[in-house]
Length: 181
View 1 (cartoon, helix red, strand yellow):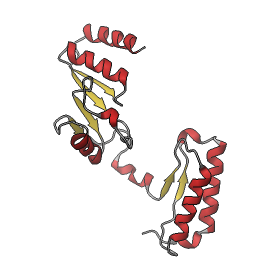
View 2 (cartoon, helix red, strand yellow; view 1 turned 90 degrees about the vertical axis):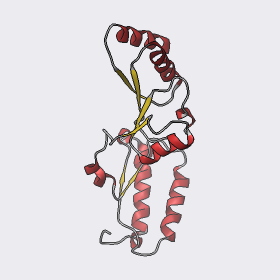
View 3 (cartoon, rainbow, N blue to C red; view 1 turned 180 degrees about the vertical axis):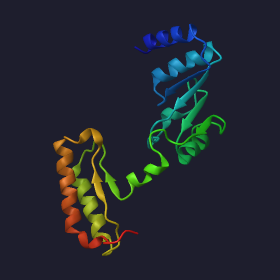
View 4 (tube, one colour; view 1 turned 45 degrees about the vertical axis):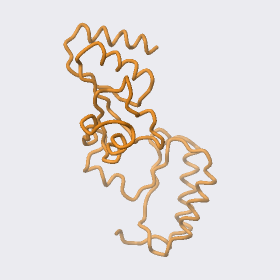
């Protein structure tokens, strides 16, 4: 499939006068294949857009043949990891403000627990969370809300999990302040 994509992109590039090729970049094999062909066949500047956080073991982002000439990232730590651990130099990693989240959206993330799209063992998660709440001093935590993953709004598993978290929050409401800090 990636060979067909590459042929299509090569035809488009060959019949136009592009200066830059920008694509989401996750270090996947097909992406490296396509970008490597563009890097080798033209003077087009290739830019990879890292649209999410780096994974815990980000080996797919190691600088290698087929990587874009430059990467756009949104976090200082992403830039630092790419430069210090994964072989990119400082001129190859561009730090830009997120196109997805604006600084004014910061309040959207405050005082919330975000439920991931997938999780395995909800019983263990609830146990860990309850243990965390037990260890806190009374009136020491800000109140917060639970926010489901947007793709899981109808998931019975997620809704049940959120309900169980809310039961724990109610059980340990003495741990939360009435006023926000």
